[in-house]
Structure formats: structure tokens, C-alpha cells
Length: 109
Image 1: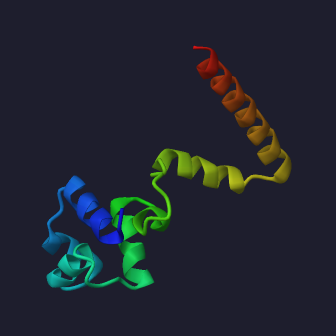
Image 2 (image 1 turned 120 degrees about the vertical axis):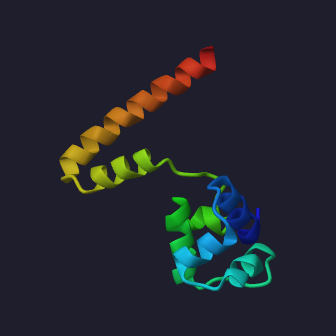
């Protein structure tokens, strides 16, 4: 899906008008319409603001991935990254084991 379509879909999903969105990111209302119609591309700063408003990654917004990251999972990952190496390794080892077990259960069900 293109950038413009994603912006349009996310805006509608969040029930935000073009005018409201333009006020939040500091551009003229017509600019949002141009983004959605693929007539213009935003600066990285504006794209970043859009991603923040919609709580999606820039990769998702620009179509590099179809995966929407869950905010709770992202927050946990960031917390794990800040831990000392040994703690991080233990946590990731446990997570890997749980993922392996879940995949095995799914395969046999």
C-alpha cells in the first residue's frame, strides 16, 4: 500500500479530519489531501510526526513493512535493550524457548 493510502486509511481509522491532522502536524489542510492523492511527499520531519500521531513506525507508514508493532511489545523491547547484557541474554533465552514451545503447539494442533 502506498504512503498516501496509508495516511488516508490511518486518518479515517482514527476518525481524524484532514483539517485536524493538518493542525496537529503544522501544515495546511490542502497538503494532507495532496499526500493522500500521492501528489506530494512529506519531509522526514512531517512523516515522523504522522507516524507518532498514528502510533505506527515510519517503516509501516512508507510501506516498507506490513507489520504494525504493538506499543506494549515495543515498550518491552526497549526496556530489555536497556538492561545489562547478562539479564538481556537470560530474558531473550526464555522468550526464545516460549516462542519455540508455542510454535510446536501450533504445529501439532
